[in-house]
Image (cartoon, rainbow, N blue to C red; front, top):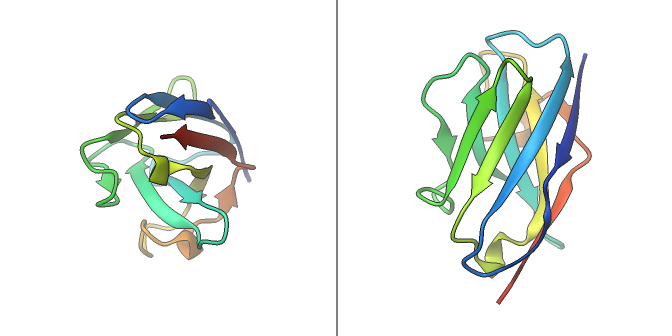
Length: 125
């Protein structure tokens, strides 16, 4: 069982930055994938970024490439999402998630087993 708690959301002007944190507790194996997803009102949950807990090349949605960076601190059991050059269309609730299996797409929410409660990000124009 893995518990996830997100923090760091808030209100920011367009062009600004925020860093989201996801504190993970429980049994976490190196093979697990940590992902960030977001969901805006009236829209489906969409993939943002993912990385293996052991490290390696991150995966990003095209809409955030070059602006967002996912990283993890295995010593602290925290996964971060650094968000720069924020746009109003980035406004959403952001969720941290854990995928246990090596198979399954890291870009699909149905592949993930554990979810946090979400943190709201609002970008004003």
